[in-house]
Length: 218
Image (tube, rainbow, N blue to C red; front, side, top):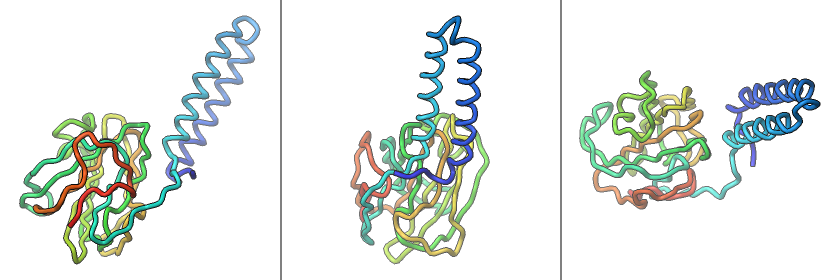
């Protein structure tokens, strides 16, 4: 396991606060109320360890296959439905949405090999990530990837707790399947818009792993 570079600053700030809070706590509370000092230490340690865990990148054997579309994120499948896309395709697509809780790994990965045809950040609201309107009204970043098999749109969506979407892809760049495409901080959702006729390999409420689970097949 390694720590994602997006977490260095947050973990550094967390370590500083952890140290300051507990130095003050033990200096002023340990003599009169030792139980309270211990309780503060345990709570702050838990929060700090959770912060480190949020930015983890676990060691995994990634799935590489040109005929398959790999899950771009860890989480649970919350939507599989046919929709009309009005952002890029302007036609009907199959949308598969993955909800990422704060406990999930938050690295986002390229579902396919291909060329970046579109990359656009949208300001927006911070509705809870499972809200139906979060796909179109929340802060989000959309990327379209194209190869000989087809064209898909991947949408990183901020949730109620997420305040920053990081996306590393630029139009015209050739990307590799399962390489990092971005990161979302503190709870979020990822939508994948697939061509009609694509075989879906996941089910509603299925727990999936980014870079590992096969989402669909061309």
